[in-house]
Amino acid sequence: MFTAHQLKDIVIKGKILSEKEFAIVVADAQKQKVKIEDHLINKKVVSEDLLYSIAATVLGLPFVNLRTQIIPDDVLTLVPEPIAVTNNIVAFKKDGEQIHVATTDPNDLTTQETLQKETGCTLIVYVTTPAAMKDALKQYHKELSQEFQKMTDDVAVTGGENAAQELPTIRMVDTFLEHAIIEGASDIHIEPAEKEMIIRYRIDGILRPVMTLPKSVQAGIIARIKVLANLKIDEHRLPQDGRFKITTSQTQVSFRVSTIPVFDGEKIVLRLLQEGTRVLSLEQLGLAPASFDAVRQSIEKPHGLLLVTGPTGSGKTTTLYTLLNMLNKPGVNIITIEDPIEYRMPGVNQSQVNPKIGFTFATGLRAFLRQDPNVIMVGEIRDTETAEIAIHAALTGHLVLSTLHTNDAVTSIARLLDMGAPAFLVSSTLVLIIAQRLVRKICPNCISSYTLDKKAITELERHFNMKEIIEVMAREKTIASTKETLASMLFYRGNGCNECHKEGYKGRVGIYEILEISPAMGTLILHQPTREELFAQAKKDGMITLAQEGFMKAKNGITTIEELIRVTKE
Image (cartoon, rainbow, N blue to C red; front, side, top):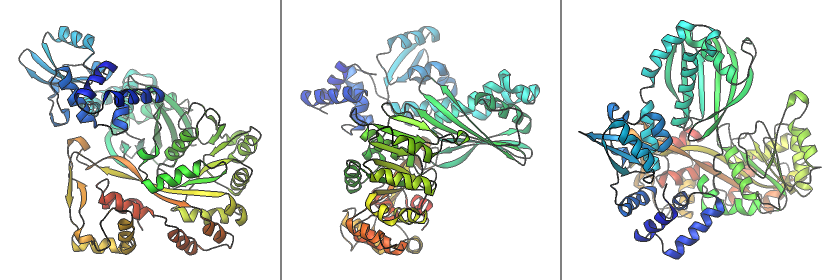
């Protein structure tokens, strides 16, 4: 971490900003309660690599890109993992009595002096970026299978559910939970098989096998997780749900636990929820400029129904929280009813359904209307009763945000009508529908361009209406004109590198279908239209479909055509 005075020197000497511009950035960062350097990077004033390389120069220190460094295990362990993770400092090279270390906080002289004393070597300090540091810290866990071998033997000796409170089992569970956090997993799947137990992580939306453990440790691991989640250890025949938290030096993570009985035991799925996660902005969600304007104008309306739709795992909750964050002001009363509450948001009154005592979405919504709300967020419209109350709330002067499970925006209208919601109420209250998917982003470290061959073009034309897609791409200035062909366009993919674990992808971004309810669409809804009629009107109104926006992101080098086919499958 740099001091404000150092950052001022860095941005001015590096000719990034003037003194006056820097003062504005500082004030804005303080207002939003974020670090100045994070604010500079998030607002794309300067890239992370450039900021930290200039910082190194200004501070008179060398800069190192840790992503290009292969760190031997004996060098990495010169800095113990707890110190490395807590203080963001790693050793990457050793020359005789000199150890070369990289840090994101060159001002942390105390840690540097401690390491010098403990190792008896001279430290050569380099500056690196937080992203590179995060990747380097993962190397402490790259040989997870070796770590587990000794623990597995110890757990097997202890045996059974009694192992839940034994140190080897505790260490084993703590290790793979911590490893999941470091790898950025969204879910952990613990799956019993006939002769073994398989652990998989879902990273960037894709399930990946992580380790296979012997059957002998199964009972102990399952029992340990049940203890953490406050579930019944001796209940093996019924599904159970629970929750627990883990606090590390870097973050606090909540684990939502679900168990179900399967043929070879009990399967457990843990959903990782980062507490205190910074809510994204509409730009960070990946919304195109036209979509951004449509969403912003819709949430500024005093009342109406705004829906976010898509399958499970498509980022609907993140989008809802982003919209709530934009609406979250001292003069606005926001109430939510969720199942479950995934993220805590200061200033928002959040409640969780509890069907066991009759507190459902519908009963919660009725109670909310007596709480003088301006904005109501309903986790999901699941039934006719909830749909009717939500629509009536929107009709009586409230802005209502909710989700549906449909494949596209147009189908959401048909779903509300199928639920029995009166057409005139849907027509008069529905403001905007956002359909979305999450696609993996191409790894920026190994991105390369290519052109499509005839076979690939034929396959795309089978999946998509390419004529319409090219017309929209030209209209949105993604390509120069409709005269361009698929054969002449450059697309992109990741070749696979150490930074992305040879996947070619790193991170995810949304693709969106924004349907504004125009007067013409509102009139059409009154006449019980078919899906085809709704879709035709949406196209007349200028709606960009998921596939069309996906192709624009593929053409701009954000994602791949393969990802687009995977998530849309038209």
